[in-house]
Image (cartoon, rainbow, N blue to C red; front, side, top):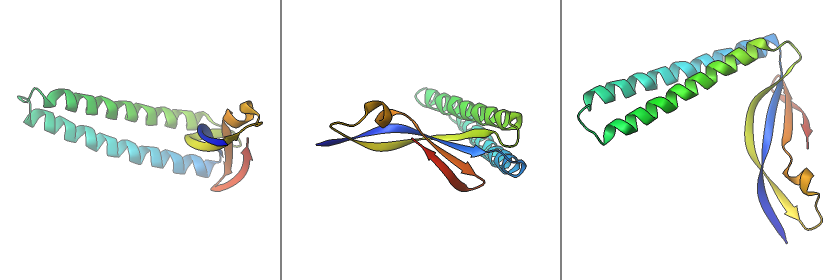
Length: 126
């Protein structure tokens, strides 16, 4: 008998000047999209200001967008602080592992790290 469980997969990239520029450009593009969403929420809030049921929904969406924007800005600060050759955590994904009787539980539930150089996977650490 086996069981499939979720575990974290960390994706790390070896920092280069080229990667920094591309990553910052991507983050700024995503920030611009979020700013557009925030503006549309503001317009919706103004046009439906008398709808008491709608106000909390718009406020919640606006707060979520502001949080995402802040997180992306933090990512820009973090990548700018990295030196060439540093490993930078780009993302954490959910992965799945099959558990069987007799497996080492710590190895099975420990996070996996995928290391990337430019756009190629160079190492997978379990």
